[in-house]
Length: 407
Image 1 (spheres, rainbow, N blue to C red):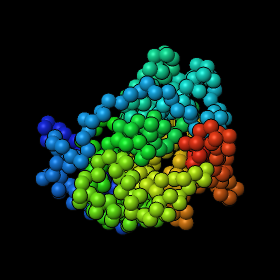
Image 2: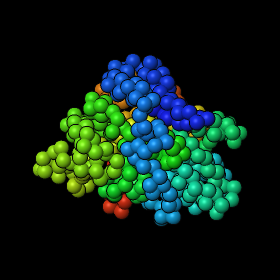
Image 3: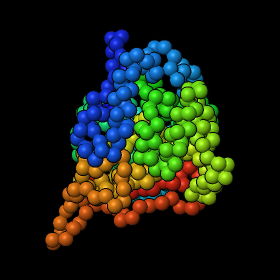
Image 4: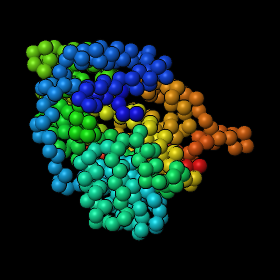
């Protein structure tokens, strides 16, 4: 699956790939019911794109994608999150094969290469900039690093092309969310603290006509925007923010990150706008959840994460180990339920409420429940970074790690 609102050009014709999104909605009645506003908005957008130049034509749209198009990969790599814990729970042995599903800046991969002899690492990432770094690392460690450009949902075909069979990988690491490298580059449009084009596409220019965050905020109606902010940002003031966005774009299209941040901040009284705190009790921008929601929606992150977990389950050998790092509650709840054996196809994938339950495939030992038939948790509870690690790397303050053994 590419994306539920993918647009691309074939033989000079614009193709609007909405059918996959429709199929997903039809197969999940709860998803369709709770997100009808978003679904209707994208249907309307599909029709309007035939006569519009927003995001799907060769003419100028709300975002000039030629501006700052070059991506530098020479910046120093970020500090890998929860490195000590990852190395401990993966317990990689010499000559084993490891799949790093989110290569990013390569911090975890480099640590594994430096600590485990003769290990082979399959380095997957959907971002071409990250794959450029992986290719450089592959040249330094000949034969030990194999870069793979693609999404989680494309992993099966990528491994098949390399003649790597299912059930043959020894360890898998999945570090979900946005990489520090992407956040640090203003031209990628992920950071609200750096002014840049409102992009947020993790695939970069791999799909040039794929809708970006600017397309979303300038095209969807108020109800659909509020649904996205509620579902993916867990934003309590979603309706107020959506209303402010719609009002602002009537004057000028919203095409820059700090422009959007200012619109969101302007919808709150000053006392409220500066009252939010992060987990280190530092001031947090009131638009943080809005940016998170748009990023998740643009990149189809929840469905991709689910696809990544299914792929990890398929490629790991019995006794193989999985570590998953998440950075917000939506991701963590999905991972937790997957490892418990919940059938996530029967859940509302936009709202993983802590009280909802799905069909669970459990193993019974002496008539008692023993968790998932596929996974044995290496630690019953979620693992948090140590305080010293958070002080050294504040971006990892919200990280959560879950580790499991493939049965």
